[in-house]
Image 1 (cartoon, rainbow, N blue to C red):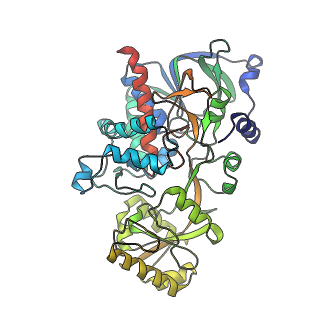
Image 2 (image 1 turned 135 degrees about the horizontal axis):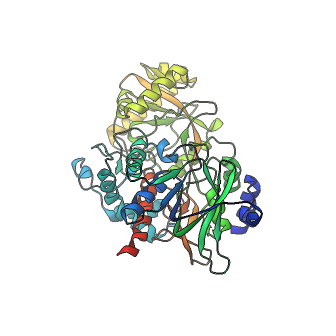
Image 3 (image 1 turned 90 degrees about the horizontal axis):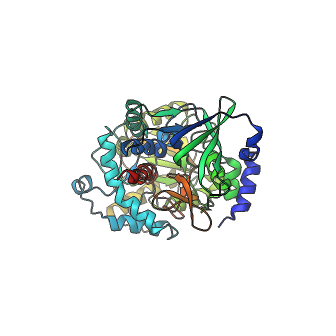
Length: 482
């Protein structure tokens, strides 16, 4: 557990971020005022803006540090976990809200807050329907994503997270909600006597201004996986790893929230997933659906159940020689991926960053690993599929043989992906201080928060979390109009 003062001191030193509000009186600032101010224009922030508008608010401003909107949602695989009585029934999958809740709690080592888990699981399906009402489209089949541990992962029709951002932004554009890009929040302003948050300091075009709020400030700015120093402070083993995140995911809003008195927790739990090797232009995704692939190391051997928790997979890969392994699929596993991912694999093959061959032997030679052992490893895996039991590692999702050419493989290294810890919130998205008291008018949702996942996030819960809690924030504010 991190001490607030220690983490704040380290993070401020690492990021070289001055406390702008301390010198505010010396800065020439121009003021403006809005009812609702939202920081971050990814899945959480855009959902919050749409939901606020639908619940009666019209004076809404969204700030985005980057030159364009979308955040990490835009870059994601797009998986959205939900109990779905329609699609899961057609797929023969028996699921329930209680099972969903119990899995999140168990796989988070019961360091989750049950109230957040209950709210999340209850809201995911209605949030999917809400997205569909905004012209978002999901595929009909159900999958089990990497680290999801159960087949309840829905995949959008459009690649990655583009469908979510497009649907939300269409509403925002049609209803003239203002999004201001290249706008970086520097500090949160809080009345020293009442403790009420009344605005923030923002840097726009090298000019610092205040933006005052009447009703609420919502933080939907994501995590800090691109901040190497902050990640290293939280987990020294992750120093120097690449990140899957958009470049500006550096934790500015988290540090500002800590300075404003917000409690933080679980910051030491940083999720990693396979991603780009240093110097690569794009990520090669062969690992997405765990039932169709295996991991082999430089000895040509499997070393973990590929459908394990994400933190277990991280530890297993980080303990391999050179912290590297290879994801391997056959033709059917390749074709199970959507066109966007298949096209990316083809581009990687053309650049020499992924490999394909008509035999496992030839593929192993291209990977510079022992061919005989690799052939034996695939043979043993196929036997496990026949027997329905992986005696060696305990993999449960034994969906198919790996036996149909051509075969594909690519190197895998861990990338920093998702910050499980963050500011503490309650089920109304209200930010809490270290005494458990609400910080008036300060709210948050998505990756910047903590409490839903505990120590480990299930794959497919990230986008769902951002949109569920962004939407919930608007509903909470909307209670004032009831």
